Amino acid sequence: MFLTTAEFLPHHRAQRQQTVQIISAAEAHGQARLVEMNRHVLANLDRIITALDQPAPDTEETADAG
Image (cartoon, rainbow, N blue to C red; front, side):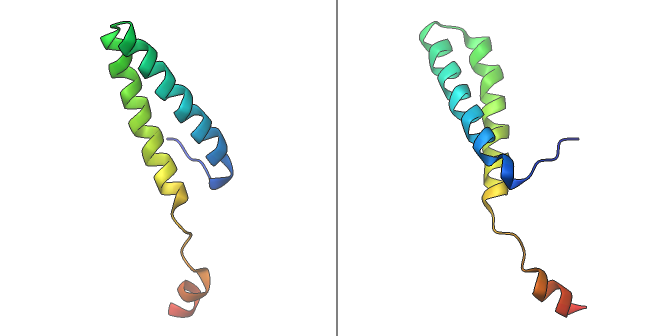
């Protein structure tokens, strides 16, 4: 199980950029397996970044609903 918070967004974005560079270099060198593996990493990072970019639910509304 992997848990993270928005405070780590800069790290996730930096890792995403590094992964894109790895994919580009691997494609240029015909390293299909390396491309494939890192595309999975990239997809996971995109999901993490998208989820952390979402605004947090309004806790006041949630507290008032009960």
